[in-house]
Figure (cartoon, rainbow, N blue to C red):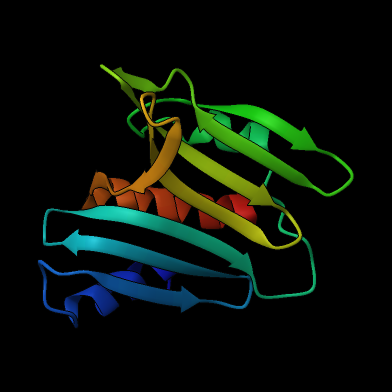
Amino acid sequence: MHLVQELNQRLREVPSDQAVAVRVSDDRVGIELRLSDWNRLGCLLERLTLDRRCRDQLSLDPTKIVGEITYLEESLAIIETEIESDRAVLRSSPPRINGNSTSFFEVDLNRRQGLSLRRYNYDCALGERFPVAAPLSNATLERLISDLSRLAG
């Protein structure tokens, strides 16, 4: 069964309008979603993680992610890369600025382990960032899972 279909089936088994964590996998990758709320129209995504299930490194290329994941609230850009450790950090560019707070998506990518996608809010007055739930339609979430699992190829 395709990962998106399996996730949809698992979500249908859980009552809507509540927090849920769902994990699915195939022979290549595992995907875990943490949702603070969900229903038939959309969700509040706390975190999406994708990890490798085999010995091979994931073929996740930060440039391809930036080029293909263009449908979130903001575009993504590569912020830093560490070639020796196959790591990269991608963030919203530009981030959303609202008064004293800045919100952005962040992708922490490690080709040897996987990736994590979260949304953060940086409070300028406090000088700290906090994870926040990102509102996504079900169609956007399905597309994101499908694209990331394909890119992990």
